[in-house]
Length: 158
Image (cartoon, rainbow, N blue to C red):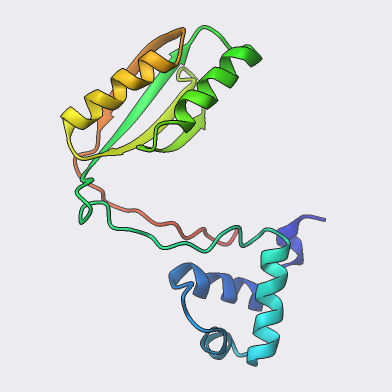
């Protein structure tokens, strides 16, 4: 049985509240979903223990931190062997500005999301990237002009 099959309406309500503000005290989360503090705490604990709630973090405003430029980088390679993948994984892990990396289906092998101050900052990251990762066939960068929607909240599956 899948994890989502074990979640009821109250679990989903708790997840919704916590995705909006994970800093709320348990009693307030409980009030919003119609549970006592103890019952709510037990459910949150179960959601954490099962790994459904993976982390509780503070979300920072990149622009207020001077990181106003988001770059999406498409990478193609002709190598797909375990040694290359290990070198690639190690190389991207060492670059803090890479906030996401996805292995893709289709014409692009990997898609990176990189958050930087400006184009000059991105150029320094680009140079690090190509120096640390061998056998990249193509790197294509696209700069975000405007963030029109961004959320970390996940939807309830239909």
